[in-house]
Amino acid sequence: MSTYTDEIRKRRTFAIISHPDAGKTTLTEKLLLYGGAINLAGSVKGKRTARHAVSDWMEIEKQRGISVTSSVLQFKYNGYCINILDTPGHEDFSEDTYRTLMAADSAVMVIDGSKGVEKQTIKLFKVCVMRNIPIITFINKMDRDAKNPFDLLEDIENVLGINTYPVNWPIGSGKEFKGVFDRNTEKILAFTANNGQREVEKQEYSLDDPALDEVLGQYLKADFMDEIELLDGAGDEFDLDAVRQGRLTPVFFGSALTNFGVEPFLEQFLQLTTSPLARETVSEEVDPMSEDFSAFVFKIQANMNKAHRDRVAFMRICSGKFEKNMEVFHVQGNKKMRLSQPQQIMAQEREIVDEAYAGDIIGVFDPGIFSIGDTICSPRHKVQFKGIPTFAPEHFARVRQKDTMKRKQFIKGTNQIAQEGAIQIFQELDAGMEEVIVGVVGVLQFDVLKYRLENEYNVDIIMENLPYEYIRWIVNEGLDPKTLDLASDTKRIQDLKGNHLLLFTSYWSIDWALDHNKGLELREFGTN
Ligand code: G4P
Image (cartoon, rainbow, N blue to C red; front, side, top):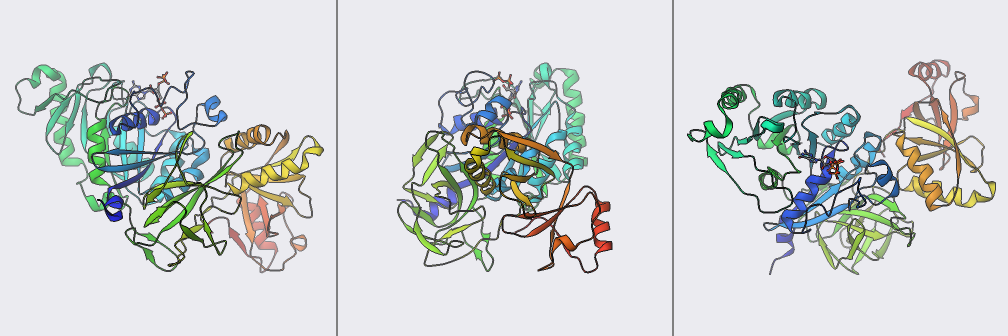
């Protein structure tokens, strides 16, 4: 019988991030195939067809073809228990990605080999680098014409500021794609397309194999030989510590669609990453193997299922074992409680869990008591995890309901969506709640807000974009913002707790405010 520490040692929890269309869904599906979680490739994806990816459950995602919410998929492979956290594929949701990364121990970054690092996801990928967790790169679609692999690596290094170590090296691409050279085994794995099956035929050649001339063709072989010589001389040394600290990303080339290179990737990924690591709290480090249960909330999602109109708090278990009906302590609420309906969620399929271990993600029914960053722990050993930073909103709009009779729903909707961390709401000084100022990190979040208010709360809204780009807290206690001497394009607002803030259109007006108001102290938004 396995003990709970064996269970924890088996865990690998990672987030998967990519540009839309780079192949995240396809890769996830192939990984699930190896784990036997699904039987047939194609059952996960097919966004533009009538079927929808299991990880995409909101209408807006289907319409836009982007993934807005994150879901969790669990599967078993070779004695490991793997948790994949899906993330939105657009930089407008980089804050959501950051939160999800807080729950992960490592990240897989999927890049389209024909495009390299794309502009709209630079921010998203940078957020990944910020977390200092191992990042493993999968350069996908090598069966299509790809950019020069050296340029792809340079792209990653320059744009994201992380060193690269190619674990394997592609030979040609597109119609000329012949396979990859594994730098560790020094074997060439010849390319064979295998779309839907788990078993992949493996054709391996060593570098001195006489058949190689024929397999690669003389021209490609000569090129390839030059390239690996260059690689050995020019590339970064492999350094596992640097990988584990997120300073060096191992890079794999492959093709998710044809199932080429996916299993070797998964196997090496499991070696490169670790089981759940210790997590810092405000006072100590929590050992994942500790017998005392602890977890933190990294995501809150309301109305995942319209029929139930429920709200689910997702928590990452950091230590110990969770058992159904066990008593836990909610630190921020200062209350003992039992978590209701603990579930493991595979997109729309939910399963009630009887037990879960450090590294796992569970979703629990939330009657409105949890906030992002909250700690839940054993009442025997109370700890509090450090909070999850909030990103400063960069876009602002004035929002009000079209129909004043819908005031209640409007307030409820905007508040709930704000509690989930999807938007931040503010008010004009002395204003009521029928009109709010909404701040978001990416403009697409406005679309989500409008869509969700209409669909989940039945409220049509009028949204007027505001020109502000910077937000600052006023630190000085008791200072009446009306007494401040401000540039005409600066706006005074307050948050729902009554804290005063200022909105600016430029750095110039921030300086202006500081110059004209002696003693005024402004704090940048963020970190709670
Ligand atoms: P995403 O989740 O990152 O947004 O990407 P997704 O997996 O949905 O893949 C986007 C498109 O790229 C899909 O084609 C998919 O079949 C294709 N694709 C993924 N991996 C590979 C690969 O290794 N090689 C090639 N050639 N294509 C790949 P689509 O036409 O947009 O969708 P569908 O009609 O196939 O469903």
